[in-house]
Amino acid sequence: MIRGVRGAITVQSNTEKEIAAAAELLLKKMIDENSIAPEEVASVFISATDDIDQGFPAKAMRTLDGWKHVPVMCMREMSVQDALPLCIRVMIHLNTEKSQQEISHVYLGGAVVLRPDLEKK
Image (tube, rainbow, N blue to C red; front, side):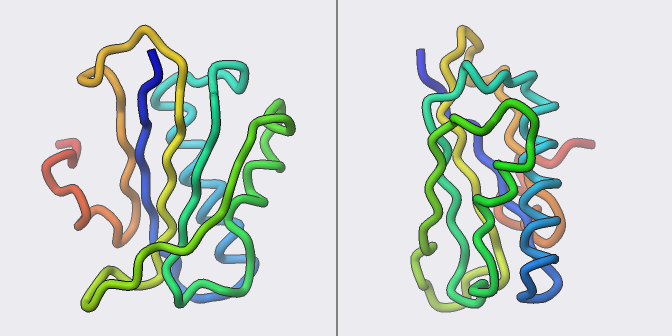
């Protein structure tokens, strides 16, 4: 079974350093909370809003030990009026036996407003 693991985070500023740090933080949290091994991953899609253009968030995946051969793609998020600015979104396509209810989606920083129903209390 392939399941999607979703996550999002906002950056404070459009700098390469901030983009890389935020993407790495989000990816590590998604991986840790779901106990994901690179060999279980089919692919990773990472999108960024139009106001993020000083670095590739997907480069953060290459800093993670063991993730060198996982297919990853960066793309632009749809430009929608009043959408959350400075936002990086991630979808990990994971081969797993976990049910959808067992998947932990991760929303950090200003991105918690995207899925308040998933906020952990």
